Structures are given as C-alpha cells and as structure tokens.
Length: 446
Image (cartoon, rainbow, N blue to C red; front, side):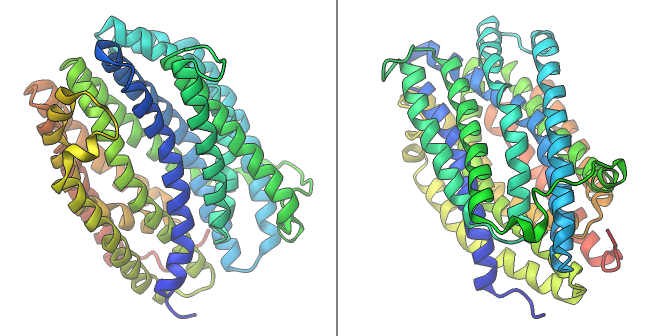
C-alpha cells in the first residue's frame, strides 16, 4: 500500500467538503433570511438564532461524537476487509443514538428554559431563543440517525452520496425558510420559529434520503447492514470505548463555544449580532478544513487497519498541503473584500461596518486552525480517542480562561474577543503535532 495520492485524497475529501458546505447553507440561509427582517427585530432574531443554533449544535455534538467513534471503528474493519463486522456496529450505534436523541430532547424541553434564563440578560433575546429551540429540538431525532449513515459512508470511503444528500436537505431548508419566516407559499409568517421548523424538517428529509438510497442502491448485504443482529452490551461497549471520549470532547468543545456567545451577549445585542455574522463566515472556512480533517481521520484508520502505519505521516502532509491550497485564497478574498462578504448575511450598513474588524481577526486565525484541526483528527484516527480527549480538554481549558479574561473581565471590543480562536488553535496544534511525532500510536489496536 502506497501513500494515498492527491487524487485519492481529493476523491474522498471533495464529497465530504460539498456535503458540509451544503449543511452550512442551512445556517447561512437562517442567518441571511432573519437578517432581513429589518431593524431591531432583525438583530434580536440574529442573536436568538445564534444562541439557539450554537446550543443545538453543542447538544448535537454528543450524537456526532458517538458517530465519530463508530466511524473510526467501521473504517478499521473496512481496512481489515472484515466487512461483515461493519453491520452490527452500524445497528448498535443507530439504536443507541435513537435512545440518546430521546434523552436530550426530553432534557431540552424540561430544563432549557431555566438554564437560558440564568444565562441570557436580554429579555427579548431570551424569549426569541426559547421560541427557536422549542421547534429546533425535534431535529435531534432525525439528525442523530442521519449521522450514523454519514459515518458509515465516510468509513468505507464512498462519500459521493453525502453531496447529493446535502443538496436535497439544503434545497428543502431554503424553500421552507422563505415560506415560514416571511409567510410565503400560503404558509404562516413565523419569523425565528419558522427558521427552526424549516431546519428540523430539512433534517428529516436528509434522513429519509439516506434510508431510501442505502436500501435501494447499496449492496448492504456485503456489510450485514440491515440484517437483524442481536443487541449486545458487549458490542455497544466496544463502540462506546472509543465514542465516549469523542462524545464528551465534542460536546465540551462546542459547549465552550456556546459560553463564548453567552459571554458576548452580556456586551450587548449589537456585539452578539456581529458575532453571529462572523460565526457564519467562519463556518464556511471551518467546513473546508473539517472535510480534510475528517478525511485524515478515516484514511489513517484504514491504513492502520491494513497494517501500513508507515504511510500515515506522508498521507497527512499531503492532506495538509491540499487544504491550505484551498483555504488561503478564500482567506485572501475575505480579507480584501470584507464588506462584500458581509452583505451576503445582512443589508444593515451599520452592522456590516461593525463586523469588519472581528471578521478580519477571525479569518487570520485559520492560518493556525487549519493545521490544528487536521492534526487533531489524525490523532483520533489512530483510535486513541482518550488521548484526543486529553488534548482537547487542555486546549479548551486554556480557551475558557482566555474567554473569561478578555470577554468577561476586560469587556474588550468584539474583535479582540475573536482572538480566542488563535489561542485555541496554537495550543491544539502544538499538542496534537507533538503526539503524532512522539507517542506510540502505530501499534494501537481497536
């Protein structure tokens, strides 16, 4: 087995990139439509969708983190050519994720209002955030099951379907957003609640697409994907042994980001609106880096399953070169034409002007964030998710302390608040790279 060529890496990464880009358009369309509600109501809606959206993502990361562990395990079995072992992993994971979705849905319905009441100072933003989440949490049932399908396709490196699925999901979201936010197509004008309903329904469409495509177009018998297997705690425990660390790690990572938004909300409604817009632009860069980072995780696990650890580092360096080749020109466009980029999200001239400094700071962070995310996912791909968890917690602890000092203590300008991304990236890159250079990951069995 030779190192994965640039062509092969691109064949795996490009569909993941397109699928993540399409999924990003869900948040982008929410922001773009709500940003055009106009005046103070538009800023409140933007702030509410920011807090509600990040809260939703933080809880969703529990399910996504579990799927990452399942993906690593399925990729290892795929590399070993033990294909029939993939089906039981898929089934046990789907059942667990359905149970987890029920738990987080119930928790969100019962306790979220009390939690948010103690965190959000603006009464208007509090009620708008609650209105958004009351409908958004139904999406947990659909997205938690969809991510295990995504993990399966990434694990077997057949990622083209992810693009088609995401296009269908985004088109559904755009049409429903337009109808439910502004009251078009005979639908009621629901504002921020309409954005939440549209996103949840789009996730249902995504899940149905995965089920129909997999049953009709994939040789699922080769993997025992839908053949009934006995539920065993031993099999689930094997997956959880990997996934428990990624679940907590992903939840804490985005949960800390949620606390960043809460901290910025204390600075006022305008800084929060600025942060939401900058977050949306950041997400565009993040999904590009994330697609290559996910590719690294999957290919590393496949290589170790094929007992070719010597090919890991050359492959990761190729992935990094390809990622920077795409991310650097985009960074240049954002830095040279910030006003043009921001007009995608809002037509409020004052808000655009206020957002430019924070946008510049955020964009520059990707010089280090790119390497940090790829190397961190490489650590996860080796199967040592406990080590990855430890690295993440060290980076997050540093990040949280910096957020407290800059945002809460200094009450700095929102542009300075975004330097938190530089701090996180520097710590994460340093720790992950040192692990891959110094630790004994080559003999890790899962």
